[in-house]
Image (tube, rainbow, N blue to C red; front, side, top):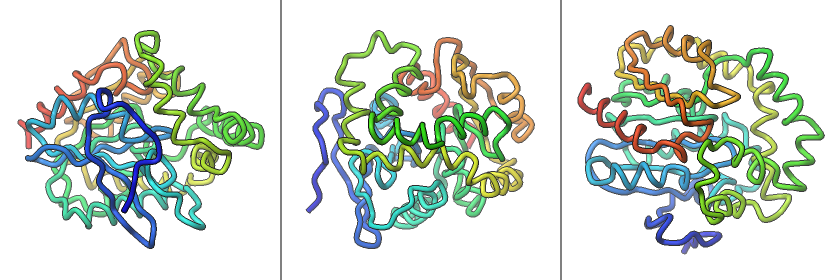
Length: 289
């Protein structure tokens, strides 16, 4: 019997827990509502909590599915796990098979982009449409490599493991409306990582921007397999990492048919800033499927 690892109030996170077991470890996920499945993939150092307001908005019309990667949220830390995006993608591919998802909408942000799209380009027939938000899926440019060297290098690793830096500092800085949020919201992002060992996954992700460059390049090379899918681009323009017109235009080159929503008052974790706009994008996408 699995139990959640920490408490979040019912008011904030009113969802029943579900568990997917693989190789003796369990991945926690939310599965709410019925209809077209919407698979919502998070990045670093977040978990299904990030999607709570979008799920509340959509669960009367769609089947909303949001997993926590191994080592994140309420999921187990599998023995010997490396926390690389490729390993997370293998879990997500197995999870999609487990739920027998077909004709699903894939919603991605941050590392959820490469993780989800790496699966989607291998099984494009199962994907009905895409909601892409503040992410990338190609070899990192110079500024990405620099971020990786700083935040994913020895000093960054020390800060993440010793001080929970990503969850405690980077998450609040990536929310435009952070001053409107109660302390319990930020606590929900730090609570999954009570020990240095539990923070390993948050330290690996920034390192992997460089280490996984060939894997990332391979995803970008295969995005053409998804070109006929309906796509919604929803972009937080106050995001220091991804809020540039150059990145938006690059996505538009991959998906010329995509509908673009620029959110001028949203940052990197735009699910916290403007969940209603993201829910509206899912509804628009469903009309096009």
